[in-house]
Amino acid sequence: MKRVRWKTLSLRARLGVLVAAAVAVAVVLVSAISWSITRADLYDQFDARLQSYAQLAAKTASPADALATLRSTGNRQGPGHDGGLTVQFLSPAGAVIGTAGAKPVIPPRAPGAPTAPGEGSRTSDVRRIDGDRYRVWTAQRSDGGTVEVAQDSEDVEDTLGHLGLWLIVVSLAGIVGATLVGRVIARSALRPVDDLTAAAEDVARTQELSAAIEVTAAGEIGRLATAFNAMLGALSRSRDEQRRLVEDAGHELRTPLTSLRNNIELLIHAEANPQRQLSADDRSRLLADLDTQAVELTALIGELVDLSTGERPSEAAERVALADVVGSALERARSRWPKVSFTAELAGAEVLARPAALERAVLNVLENAAKWSPPGGSVQVTMSVTPDAVRIRVDDEGPGIADADLPHVFERFYRADAARALPGSGLGLAIVEQVLAQHGGRAEAGRADTGGARFDLAVPPAAS
Image (cartoon, rainbow, N blue to C red; front, side):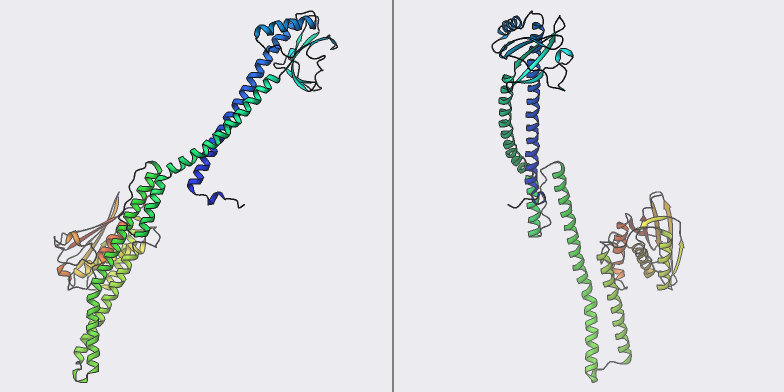
C-alpha cells in the first residue's frame, strides 16, 4: 500500500486532518485526566476509611474485638464497607500476635516498600494476599505494638475498569465525530478559497481581466480576494496601455514607412527608366530625404523600445549626486545642439535613482527646449533643494506652450500643431513623465518668465 505523503494532500484534507487530530488529542487528554482524578479520589476515600478503621482497631484489646467493632462501623456506613477486612496485631518487635478476618495472615511489607502509614505516610501500602491486591494501613497501639488493617480493593479496581472502558468508548466516538466535524469545518472554511480558485481559473480561461471577484469573506481570505482584484486591475491597465501603445505606434510608424517606400519606389523607377532619370539635384534631395526619414524612424523605434521596457526597469537604483546626472545630460545636449547656449546653476543633493534612466529624462527635456529655441537662443537650467524634493527647472526662449496643449504635453505621441513640422516622435516627454513617476517624483510643464516653455522635474531626496 502506497503511503500518502503529507505534502501531496490537498489543503482541505490537511485542515480536516489537523482539526480531527486536535479534537482527538483533546478528547483523549480529557478522558485520561478524568480517569486519573477519579482514581486518585476513589483511593483517597478508600485510604481515609482504612485509616479510621486502623485508629479504631488500635483502641481494642484483640484482633477479634477490633474486627467486630469495624464490622459494626462498616454496617452503619453502608453495605460493602466492611467487605474483605482483615485485622492483625503486631508486637513491638514486629511479631504477629493475632489475626482475624478474611485472611489468615497479612504478609509483611516487601523490602524497600514505602514507610507504613502509621509511621508518617499519608497513603496505604499495597500487598498481595493469596493473589489479590489488598491495601493495608498501619496504626500504633498504646502498648508500643502496631495494628494492621487490610481490605480488598477489588471494588475500586472494578469501578475504575468500567470507567476506563466507557471513557475509551467515548474517546473513540469523539475521534470519529471529530473526523466528521473536521471535514465539515474544512469544507466550510475553504469555500471562499474554492470560489477564489474558480474565479482565477475562469480569468485564465477567458482572459477577461475586468471580471472582479466579489469579496464576501473577511480576514485573510478577504485580503487575498482584494489583492487578487487589485492584481487583475493592474494587469488590465497594463494590457490596455500595451494595446494603446501598439495602436499608437502602428499609426505613427505608418507615415514614415509610407514616405520611405514612396521615395524608394521613385528612385527604383528612375533607375529602371533612363528617360525618367532624376537630375543630380533631385537625386541628392531624395537621398537626403531618405536619410532624414531613416534617422527619424530609427529614433522613433528606439523611443518606443525605451518606453515599453521602461515600465519594467532593469537598472538598479543607487545613491547618486543629481548634479552629476544633470551635468552629464548637459554635455550631451551641448554636443547635439551647438547653436543653442546652455547655462546651468547646479546644487549639491543626492537622490536614490537609476542614473541612466534619470539622465535620459533630463536629456529629453533639454533637447525639447533646444528644439524650440531659436538659433543663438539660451536654455537655462536651475537646480534647487527643498526638504521634500530636489527640483530641476528648464526654461527656454521658444514660443512657449499653448494653454490648450499644456494638459497633453506628456501624453504619448501627442504633438502640438506647431510641432508637426519639426522632427520628433512625440514620445520624449512621455518617457520623462514615466521615469519621474518610477522615481517617486513628478514632471510639470508651464510658461517661463521669458515667454518660452518651462519644465519642472522634482525627485525625492535620498534619506540621510
